[in-house]
Length: 129
Image 1: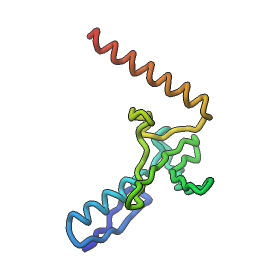
Image 2: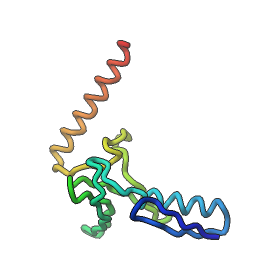
Image 3: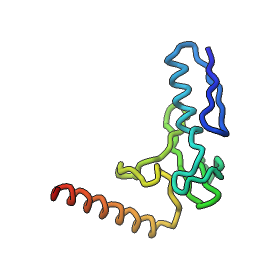
Image 4: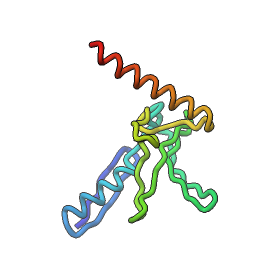
Protein backbone atom coordinates (compact mmCIF):
# COMPACT_ATOMS: atom_id res chain seq x y z
CA UNK A 1 0.00 0.00 0.00
CA UNK A 2 1.07 3.57 -0.51
CA UNK A 3 -0.16 7.05 0.30
CA UNK A 4 0.75 10.33 -1.36
CA UNK A 5 0.11 13.32 0.92
CA UNK A 6 0.63 17.04 0.51
CA UNK A 7 2.17 18.20 3.80
CA UNK A 8 2.16 21.90 2.94
CA UNK A 9 2.18 24.16 -0.11
CA UNK A 10 5.69 23.14 -1.15
CA UNK A 11 6.04 19.52 0.01
CA UNK A 12 4.32 16.35 -1.13
CA UNK A 13 5.49 12.94 0.08
CA UNK A 14 4.79 9.34 -0.84
CA UNK A 15 5.05 6.64 1.84
CA UNK A 16 4.72 2.90 1.56
CA UNK A 17 3.82 0.18 4.02
CA UNK A 18 2.34 -3.27 4.21
CA UNK A 19 -0.24 -2.37 6.86
CA UNK A 20 -2.16 0.71 7.96
CA UNK A 21 0.08 0.91 11.02
CA UNK A 22 3.22 0.96 8.86
CA UNK A 23 1.67 3.64 6.63
CA UNK A 24 0.64 5.71 9.64
CA UNK A 25 4.09 5.46 11.23
CA UNK A 26 5.84 6.37 7.96
CA UNK A 27 3.55 9.35 7.39
CA UNK A 28 4.02 10.55 10.97
CA UNK A 29 7.82 10.34 10.64
CA UNK A 30 8.04 12.33 7.40
CA UNK A 31 5.40 14.83 8.57
CA UNK A 32 7.41 15.59 11.69
CA UNK A 33 10.53 16.40 9.67
CA UNK A 34 9.16 17.84 6.42
CA UNK A 35 5.84 19.31 7.57
CA UNK A 36 7.33 22.64 8.64
CA UNK A 37 6.75 25.13 5.84
CA UNK A 38 7.13 28.41 7.72
CA UNK A 39 9.54 29.81 10.27
CA UNK A 40 8.17 29.47 13.79
CA UNK A 41 9.76 32.76 14.84
CA UNK A 42 8.81 35.22 12.06
CA UNK A 43 6.34 33.24 9.93
CA UNK A 44 8.37 33.51 6.72
CA UNK A 45 8.19 30.71 4.18
CA UNK A 46 11.74 31.55 3.01
CA UNK A 47 13.29 28.49 4.68
CA UNK A 48 15.72 25.76 3.66
CA UNK A 49 16.82 22.38 4.99
CA UNK A 50 20.44 22.25 6.14
CA UNK A 51 22.78 19.37 6.83
CA UNK A 52 26.24 20.13 8.22
CA UNK A 53 29.02 17.84 9.36
CA UNK A 54 31.39 19.19 12.01
CA UNK A 55 34.06 17.05 13.67
CA UNK A 56 32.40 13.87 12.41
CA UNK A 57 28.96 14.82 13.78
CA UNK A 58 26.13 15.64 11.37
CA UNK A 59 23.64 18.35 12.33
CA UNK A 60 20.23 18.78 10.69
CA UNK A 61 18.05 21.88 10.76
CA UNK A 62 15.57 24.02 8.89
CA UNK A 63 16.84 27.60 8.67
CA UNK A 64 14.94 30.81 8.02
CA UNK A 65 16.65 33.04 5.47
CA UNK A 66 14.84 36.14 6.77
CA UNK A 67 15.28 36.18 10.58
CA UNK A 68 18.07 33.54 10.76
CA UNK A 69 16.19 31.36 13.23
CA UNK A 70 16.56 27.59 12.91
CA UNK A 71 14.63 24.53 13.99
CA UNK A 72 17.23 21.96 14.96
CA UNK A 73 16.70 18.22 14.73
CA UNK A 74 18.01 15.44 16.91
CA UNK A 75 18.72 11.94 15.68
CA UNK A 76 17.56 8.74 17.33
CA UNK A 77 20.27 6.32 18.43
CA UNK A 78 18.42 3.47 16.78
CA UNK A 79 16.63 3.65 13.46
CA UNK A 80 18.28 6.75 11.98
CA UNK A 81 15.20 8.93 12.49
CA UNK A 82 15.12 12.68 12.97
CA UNK A 83 12.92 14.63 15.39
CA UNK A 84 12.52 18.39 15.95
CA UNK A 85 14.13 19.70 19.13
CA UNK A 86 11.31 21.64 20.76
CA UNK A 87 12.55 21.39 24.36
CA UNK A 88 15.71 22.61 26.04
CA UNK A 89 18.16 20.34 27.87
CA UNK A 90 16.08 20.58 31.07
CA UNK A 91 12.91 19.48 29.26
CA UNK A 92 11.21 22.89 29.18
CA UNK A 93 9.39 23.87 25.98
CA UNK A 94 11.29 26.33 23.80
CA UNK A 95 9.62 29.49 22.52
CA UNK A 96 8.48 29.74 18.89
CA UNK A 97 7.96 25.99 18.57
CA UNK A 98 11.69 25.36 18.94
CA UNK A 99 12.86 27.90 16.35
CA UNK A 100 15.89 29.64 17.88
CA UNK A 101 18.45 32.22 16.81
CA UNK A 102 22.02 31.35 17.80
CA UNK A 103 23.54 34.20 19.78
CA UNK A 104 26.53 32.50 21.33
CA UNK A 105 26.83 30.48 24.51
CA UNK A 106 26.74 33.43 26.95
CA UNK A 107 23.63 35.02 25.42
CA UNK A 108 21.88 31.65 25.25
CA UNK A 109 22.55 31.13 28.96
CA UNK A 110 21.12 34.60 29.70
CA UNK A 111 18.08 33.87 27.53
CA UNK A 112 17.45 30.60 29.37
CA UNK A 113 17.71 32.43 32.72
CA UNK A 114 15.16 35.01 31.50
CA UNK A 115 12.79 32.27 30.33
CA UNK A 116 13.10 30.52 33.71
CA UNK A 117 12.49 33.80 35.57
CA UNK A 118 9.38 34.49 33.45
CA UNK A 119 8.13 30.96 34.11
CA UNK A 120 8.65 31.40 37.87
CA UNK A 121 6.81 34.74 37.74
CA UNK A 122 3.88 33.19 35.86
CA UNK A 123 3.66 30.32 38.35
CA UNK A 124 3.74 32.76 41.27
CA UNK A 125 1.04 34.87 39.60
CA UNK A 126 -1.19 31.79 39.30
CA UNK A 127 -0.97 31.37 43.08
CA UNK A 128 -2.51 34.82 43.62
CA UNK A 129 -5.53 34.31 41.36
